[in-house]
Amino acid sequence: MQRTGDEKLVRILTKNHSPRLFILKVVLICLAFAAGIIAALNPVQPGGGDTVQRKGIDIAITLDVSKSMLATDLAPNRLERARQFVIKLMEELPDDRLALVLFAGKAYMQMPLTTDHGAAKLFVSSAGTEAVSQQGTVISEALQMSSRVFNSAEKRFKTIILISDGEDHDA
Picture 1: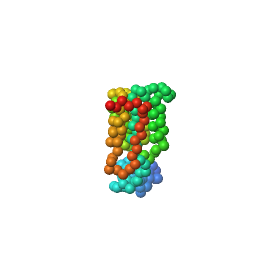
Picture 2: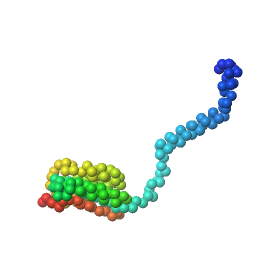
Picture 3: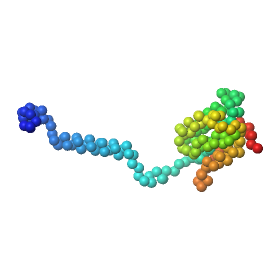
Picture 4: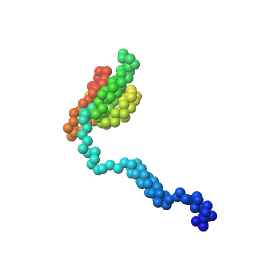
């Protein structure tokens, strides 16, 4: 205390100081910091998620994005109505895995099977005639691409939903 300053003044200033409480506070702060780090790391027990049984089926949504889908016989157009239908369908099927195949003159897998319905809605919302460079409507290729989406080894119900205006330019 003499090295710090006036002994009487130092005693008055430190009369409420308790070394034990100071050590306790430091230990509690360190424990809280360590608990925060562990929580941020999000540790998971190995094999803990393996027992989850998901109910639902695998669905490949095959959507025609040919220019004929821009016809306005349905307001605002066929393609927009198809997108609205698919998004509404996804909301009704929360436990199912979905894939998206877009086709016109050629078929493309836009999104593989996923349970992430938010991403699926984003892909469906962005589906347009510009997504496929070759125009026309080749339904057979679209169905073949859709069947390749599924894992044949899995014993699950598999469904293909084909949404098209019905024109088929397949040879």
